[in-house]
Amino acid sequence: MRLLALAVTAALALPALAAAQSLPPLPTLDETAAQRTARRAAMTPPVLQEDTALQAVVGSSDRPAADAARDVYRHPFETLTFWGLTPGSTIVEIEPGGAGWWRNILEPYAASTGGTYVPVNRPLEGMGVPDGTADMVVVARAFHNWHRAGRTGPYLAAFFKALKPGGVLAIEQHRSVDGLNPDQTAPTGYVPESYVIRAALAAGFVLEARSELNANPKDDHDHPYGVWTLPPVRTSAPRQGNANDRPTPLTEAERAAFDAIGESDRMTLRFRKPA
Image (cartoon, rainbow, N blue to C red; front, top):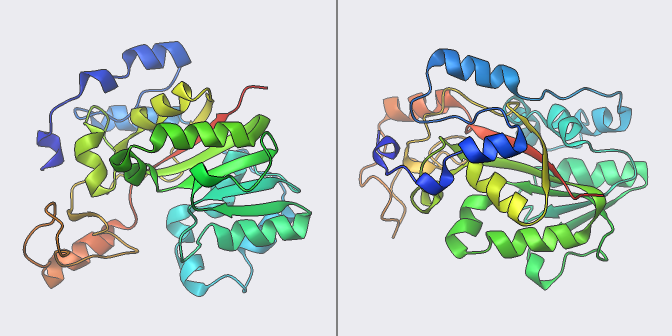
């Protein structure tokens, strides 16, 4: 596949990082089936809590039906539990997007538990809360865009400043195999997990836990129109001006095969601002 032919980036190799942080191994280009099974077993599962308010919001008929249909891929209750969401929290979501998939859960949850939900689209212009007051900053599927624009470091610094000591940086991101160059993977929507980890550590965060909740072993990370080939976007023909796209549309059989993969393979990370 195309991505497997990309040059390995020595600076992103994980042995030193893993040793320093006592991390489980990350997915690599030469990972065997047995190694994949062992790596996934080493991830931190969520300890489910009886958060009835969160259960009610996730199961509410007020959520758009299209949102609820994606729960099988995005595991909202389990993911938010893993991130450590608690009632009454001040939650800042970065670039929630027009569809607002996480917003449609986080905003009513905050309202029902006496918390605060703050959407932020331009972090460098303000985080919407006083410095040191946010309990959680949520980032979903954005690092590939930030890398291409050179914003990763400045954005993480803004998140660190906004969070209270002990606050959580919660990350969900399309994940490439490790060892690839993010300059080459980011245009396809994926970045290596080590890239995100290193960037957050450089900003002062501590990596508290990683989870395979949103992993998808069916996703080989190499698609004609990037991650957007997969659901929910389902791009099936070349996009104007995008040099990374295959020049021909998908056949019906190809479209069905990509739909069968489901949504992307994603890292799920919990960082904490030191107390």
